[in-house]
Image (cartoon, rainbow, N blue to C red; front, side, top):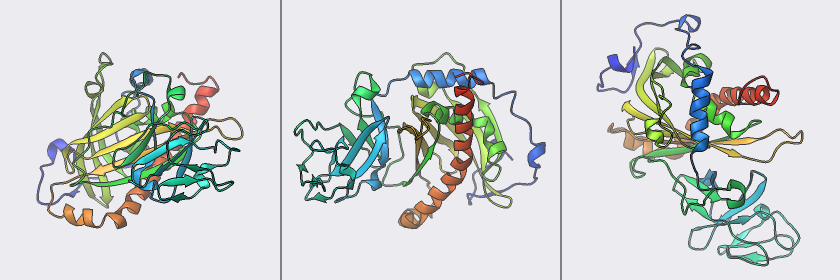
Length: 339
């Protein structure tokens, strides 16, 4: 049963009338042409991002406690000032290099644990702040020396549902690969029902990019009809659109069916290489769900209990998808795969 044959009824769930064994579903390797995926990836990587990198979930940066992460080899620390606004800058103390992520915040001021040097977020003794932005779901940091592009005042945050009506959760995982390997995974929707049969069935790519629209990511989209598995024969059929608005971001938006307007943003943030010199990338994925069902208000009220479940579901998918991305990097680095 595909979306086109499913009418929206009183209940979100649909019962599949037939079950096709995994090995008997139509193969998708012919449609998933390497050149098509590579071209979509190249167009995504050519789009500007203004030197903005996703750092963490907004909830990870709590009042009174700093958050640190090394992005593309740059040690970054963020915290909230007394007014709740973000402060960001290099993660090493300008005095003797102490890790500022381990230091306490008192009345909005970050105080180094080694010798008590206090930072209020402004320039001090060679410590220069980084521009930072909190969009309500994710925290971004601008690293101009790393990005090397013309800087933008704010990151290009994807269009999301009204936060008053939405339920959001953020998953973070780390893999030994480069951001392009994560993006390439997301720009291959054909693998969904093969690699993730526990989550997706009846997957059909009904539109692939024509390859002639590099400027407008909205016109450079994959459109998929798919049913999300819930339990047994119960599924939720939707039509979804995948776009890549920037070099390290892929957005999946439900354009028809249950949860229309909901988005899943996948952001790939480069980290520090591991001890063997292999690249490491953080997958920071934001789920922003919305529904006009009367019961969705109950789901929003139960958000603290639901967020761990959403993150667990994302972790299960990314267990397989990070293995995909890591394998892709290993083949590329050995010269056995183009990229």
